[in-house]
Image 1 (cartoon, rainbow, N blue to C red):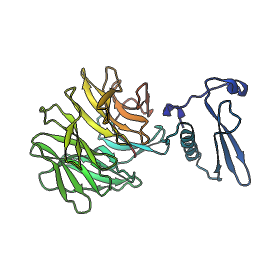
Image 2: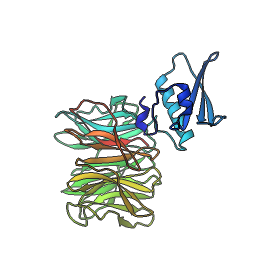
Image 3: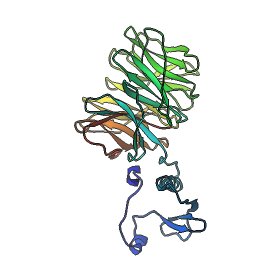
Image 4: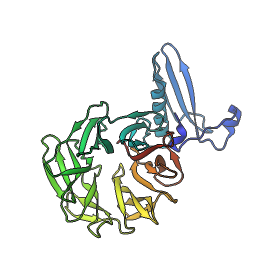
Length: 357
């Protein structure tokens, strides 16, 4: 487990005496394995204090999965030192394309060390979205004859293909809070509109049917707002909007740049992360609803695209094409340096990452 990928840790190779006197250490752990029964005793110390900050006992069985135990310990450490939830048990779904082959959805552990292919449909699979409860993933599957949406349980391989009226082509979808319906973009006769789709009876309810293109709907964590993209202000120059489901008022939130897209809500619903084309390259920005301010997160002469939040709201995962093909990266939600998520070969493209809720 690469703890450094969390951006919170540093490994120090010193003697115990040097370690105890180090001014760089803030917290440290003592681990003791007890027998009859086997228990792992963990004590968390604040440097220089005489009593532990917290302590815990973990049962250790003969067939113990050490990785799972390590992940549990990492989250416990984060919660007791930094005061927010860890992300060790979360996963990231993303799109993989090897050379010019078909695209497929893969799942990655939070640290990029455990990778697993998720989609096995015959088409090209892309644009995944986690349900709010983390039990299901929806994604697009494209064949030579049609574009479809597939829903697949996160723990099983069998996918269900959704049906739509003749003439409608689904582009992408995301989940509603209840898990019983989805928000999706449907294309018909060259125009893209946003609908609500009931999974139980395939009923379609139109939400936005402007004369422009409306795409990328995302439900807020409280179920009260929808963020989406529209080029209604100027054709082919999309901007981000927020629609309030209670007041039925729609507000435009981006005004700079000719191309703003891919909005995603922060876990607490107070911010949006999105991408903006800036001087020929896509960069990531955070919009804070209360202050109406926009903070640029990424810089550089390469594209940074398709961002999404960690479940605790402290990190962002995104795709960046720093060399020949795009790869997944982390960045703190406060900005700073970026870190590669996976260590896949250079010919494998990684795009459209989505973090589990």
